[in-house]
Length: 116
Image (cartoon, one colour):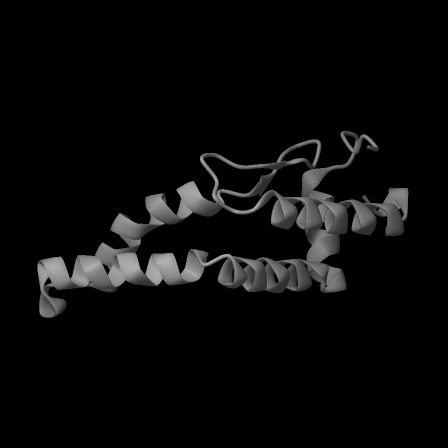
């Protein structure tokens, strides 16, 4: 695997945004999280919490506060300084992480070095 440690993360993010690749990666992640059942699991947790507290006693902020840590356990996918995908206690399939990593690496290879 190539080492992309020399790449400035801020410039990478800007290139991802400007090229439209960030949105494509986000859409790919959304699709894969749906396919692996992560979204349904988060929806079920929200419904269970609302049922427990009473539908009229729950705000969006409450749901975000309670569900976010659980969602991050499942998909805490981040790009580190050397652009490896890392997760914590992840149930996101390794194939999804690998696919995203390959897409990021492919993007890095396609961008001129002086742009990063």
